[in-house]
Image (cartoon, rainbow, N blue to C red):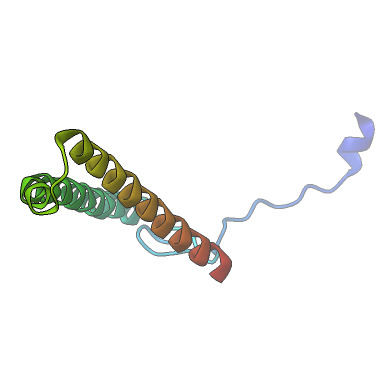
Length: 108
């Protein structure tokens, strides 16, 4: 303990690189106000995407009886069409989101 008393104490200085609220700092961080407003933007984009998915499924299910009549397939086959369409749509949606995330990560 006596050795610690002989060491000079480093002065405490304020971080002058800290950003004001809402302004990105030197390390790219964002203030609380900017983060709060981005939450609502992200929520809006997610809700719009969900609306598009539901609207797409509705259009397919409305158009499917006409396609069933024109292509002459049974009700059991119609269920396979709905399942195949949903799997293909979900797979492409995940592929698109994954490629977007991958390209954004590789740009850094």
